[in-house]
Amino acid sequence: MRILLTGGAGYVGSACLRWLLRHGHDPLAYDDLSEGNAAAVPAERLLRGDILDGKTLAATLRERRIDAVMHFAALASVPKSIDQPEAYWRTNVLGTKCLLDAMLASNVKILLFSSTAATYSFDAPMPLAEDSPQVPQVPYGTTKLAAEHIIRDYARAHGLGYAILRYFNAAGADPDGGFGEHRREETHLVPLILYAALGKRRKVFIYGTDWPTRDGSCVRDYVHTDDLALAHQLAVEGLRPGMGRIFNVGSGTGTTVLEALRACERVVGRPIPQEIVARRPGDPAVLVASPAKLERELGWQPRFPRIDEIVETAWRWHHGHPDGYARR
Image (cartoon, rainbow, N blue to C red; front, side, top):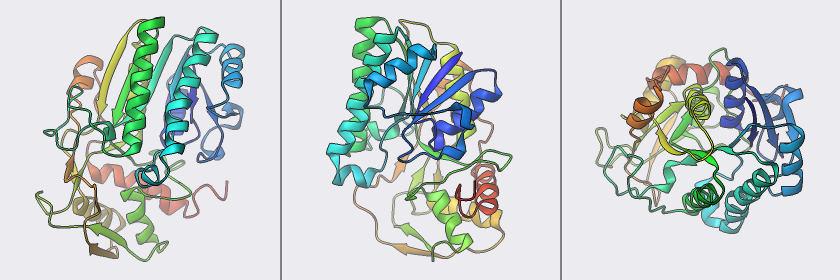
């Protein structure tokens, strides 16, 4: 299939593009590079474009004869969404509508949407299933849920086939160490811990050890980018116009912040500077997905089920590329 990946030069989008390329598909990245890294995708597969530019999107879909779209382009910082909700509604919601309109104009009928655990209620029983209550508590989650509703409305009216993948904490790097996680402003736990190991930051902060969990630190659900990419491949290959599917992508168990820290220390082979500080407002104690539906209906099985395995791939990337993509 010829697949256009909006936001395809970002961390997860580029990992999916490289995976699809290795597994017989013909993917192209559509990215404005405001957050993405051009070096993360082959140069001949990168198209510069803005998700809000519907005319260019429609022309690209037609001229490139696209069979399906994977929609990753979004703003994704929870704290920034609280401070700048207007930017999140513009990119995440209006951007999704622009894409859907371009798909209609170009007769492209298949869409995969990169959604998030942030659409769920953090008070729902864990692990979260696809029918768990969706009561987002931050604008990032609200805008992603709004985009889900727009997709479902367009699908009902126009016969689109769609799959919504709600995933949790993407982590890790390509197993060969060639490509990994690099943002202009990093917020994810695993790279922050590894930055402390590399001396790129003085220490990593642990936000509370008095949570009602097995070791007092928050529990999160880490999923390797290759396992995310496999889920996208399985979903797109099984989609047809008129179908609508929703899947969680996660481990089903979860890892505490302190367990992630210890895993990083085992992989690095030395203690990593750390400091325990007060809880952050709005953090849930536990956030874990049930992948049972994805396993049952698509046969998905993670290749990296253990946090140590995920961290090993991340360390290979960060240790080999301490400046990220700057030298590429």
